[in-house]
Length: 262
Ligand SMILES: O=C(O)CCC(=O)C(=O)O
Image 1 (cartoon, helix red, strand yellow):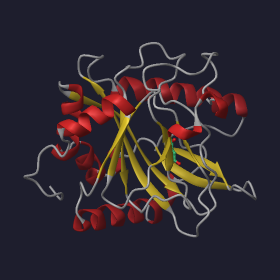
Image 2 (spheres, protein in one colour):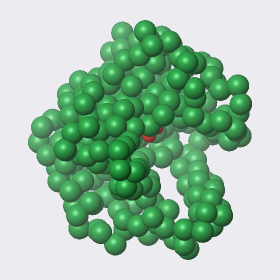
Image 3 (cartoon, helix red, strand yellow):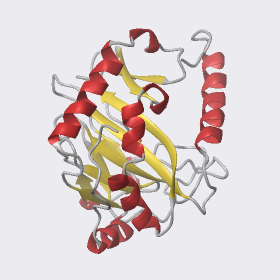
Image 4 (cartoon, protein in one colour):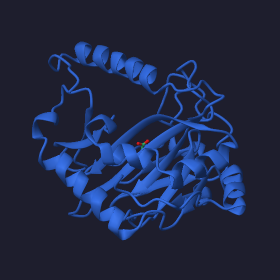
């Protein structure tokens, strides 16, 4: 066990209410500078010492174009726990898990996890809701804990969320994942500006996106998603099987080479 033990839930009743009302909440200094040093080193190890993993045909990896040159930049490991015992420990750390369980008022299950390296110049994400409307059985209780590994600010493309839309799908077309910008009101936008060790929790229907990283440093963040146990139980394995089958058929149709998982 590398992370500190002994601290339980970090969410107050007021913060829980805020999550219910707004669809997101920010919790500060959940992990200490020492813990964040370990997590940052782990991200360096994953990026620099496992270069054979990072390939367009590896189903674990995705790339994002540079916002100006369109050059593809490595973006994400999804999943990552099977190659990082430390990040797996983060997903089950009681500070996170008991906060999520207080929100749910019942046990939580890990649904998926992804480690995003937003490289210098990487494009942002268009506005979307995480729960795909056309994916039957996707748990409605799906939420994401965003752990800031580097400082997340406006200049490096922090996640931007919109308050109070988390009880409904916004797209009129269930097959359209990305949303038009005018389906949300700009006055409801909040930039999730976070320091390393802070977390934000946001609901799977909270519309969000981000701007490009316009700095010369990476902006790493760990996105850990859960569902309430009563909402389908432990679905992580079945989710990844279905997700990778979808990626595989997309890649095969796009003739980018033979997909594999490593
Ligand atoms: O990290 C970002 O820039 C946003 C990521 C995001 O919106 C997502 O993964 O759903």
